[in-house]
Length: 226
Ligand code: SAM
Image (tube, rainbow, N blue to C red):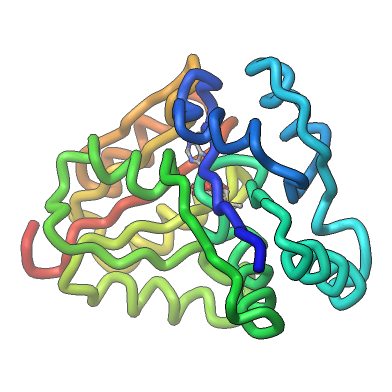
């Protein structure tokens, strides 16, 4: 049975690919990625030539059968997402689950590296002994309930939000508790990396005074440990 390497890649700064990730990639028979153009750029930067396939392009079941076939032949298959750790709020997790369902003997080896959630947490200044990661809030149905529950958490809450909805997310938090300490991490590891810290009301003011472009991680202090 083959090996599936779950490989974390940079979330912005191309220098954040680990030495081990590079060494493993050199040995792969196949690298599964979300978008071959995105991953192709990373491979080029490191002078790597690895056969790539997008796991998004074809109907899931057909694609899955092909991947499992390669693993059954004993091949070394890598899995990356566009950025960060595969499976953390991106399509990697269903792929790993389904591979293990069809080929439970597959050896799955994680090659750790950046993830936006943990990167943001590490520099947030909020309590990080325990935290809950909630991924992306729902767009419409269930959104207000999502924020109500998040605001009741006894642990630091970490969530992802798109630039189009980040102000709305801050409004949802402020509506429940305008004085709740938060940290908003923008464009982590990139040129315009910014940490906005303070109450949600203060952070919204700072954000609106700057740029709303980029990628965001929102961290909310626990309800009773401000
Ligand atoms: N698997 C990735 C990881 O491990 O972080 C996350 C993939 S998810 C589809 C993409 C979201 O992660 C973005 O919408 C944003 O909320 C967050 N994100 C990714 N890169 C980021 C960065 N450089 N700065 C801030 N947030 C980032």
